[in-house]
Length: 254
Image (cartoon, one colour):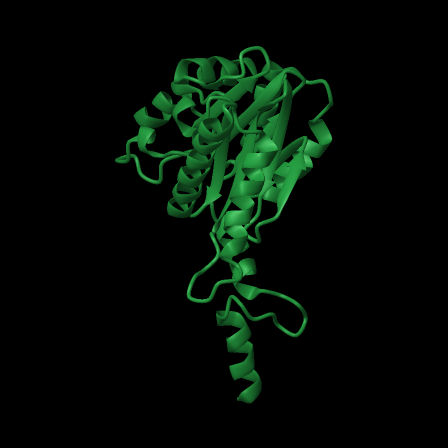
């Protein structure tokens, strides 16, 4: 009984390390991230691509209400996976920090600097009693000094920089696909196709423009552009990923 009580203390206390050096609440937060729908970030030669699975849980839900990709600043986008409410809090924090940097220094915040501001904030919640870690991971992508950069934030408060990465459900399968197909020197257009192909590999259903979100930040203008359903439909069709509406109609008649 005593051993079980000690185990529960390590399990419930965010400020208590277990004998083998683990913070269980942080590990549980990572499990919450795995339950979120997948998001992908890819660094291209001339920009950054963020893509996310945003299929609605019910046909009664408006697809526009499912937010997976957010604008942090003109030149920085953020994709999330995990608890949506936690993601909104961190994105609001990121937006405030980006504006503070503009007001204080008169220049746009760097992608790396903003990521570290976010992860410093996340890390504080791994060492304060009476709080819990954020159950969300973020992909922060943008242009810094004319160079595309992509970072990941972890519930532990650790930042990582990637060429291409995935967060959320089926992370390992997505990462394996990206490792196999990613090549340095990809254009933004090629990276958009790769991101959608990767997401299609782990989705049980065929993809639709309303079931995916995508945004790009290109070196040329350093502006975040969210892709419209019409643009997504064209990309999906180009890569033979678009759901066949005729097949659906035939199935309904049967």
